[in-house]
Length: 280
Image (cartoon, rainbow, N blue to C red; front, side, top):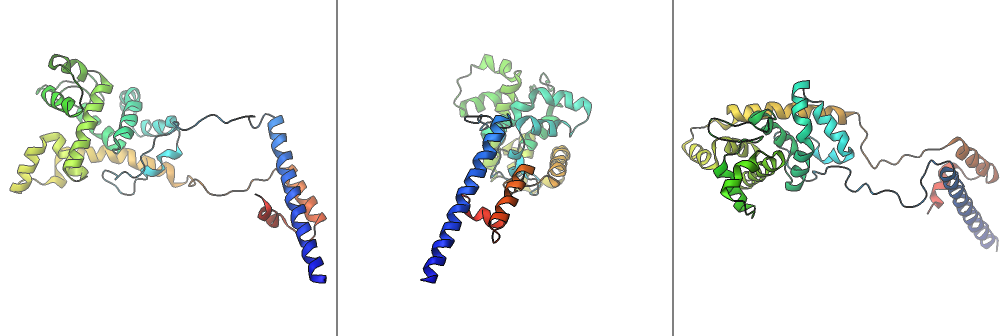
């Protein structure tokens, strides 16, 4: 009989605590809404407010936390990359950065790698033309672009190719598509794909079979890696002291602490730690 009464009393206390905590939650929420601290109704969508490169193999440094890029808003991440460079290079990168990051996301390639290649190829000059007629930001030859358009299943007339390559976003997409293909052809080896972009995939294969190429010290690859380091070091530096997401943190207002103390006084055996047990 005594045990039954104890159980009933304990159940009553637990239900009472749950009801009180629900009341506190409602009061706090209503106060926040009435003060304008929380909007009433559905929150605005933030689905597309960040870049996502989850699951990517980093180009040259496996410690680069590309999976944490989504912790930044798009504008924050863009600013981080821009401030990795000096003023002159910042001016060239800023107008094209959004396109580079979005297309890198679409094709799921390391965006720092793409930016680094553009720096080496053209220094962000969208109208650059080489002595070999390579054009635009990513220095693509018209005959190569025509072949890539066919692979992309885009019907672009031959007399339109040069004009397209002078359009920054078009040039970037063709270049990223090509780099993605090279990555796939060379089993996701960023070093080989980078060199192949410079000298051509068949020439790279020939020189590798002849053992006449030191890929690791190839000058073009070294230049790209140096630029890559500028961005990767800045990203790691910013993230070093930034807390990882999804860590539980309880925040109490002064009013909330008063409510908590009143409940603790009313139920001497309870504590603020006990209360969370009964939260739904």
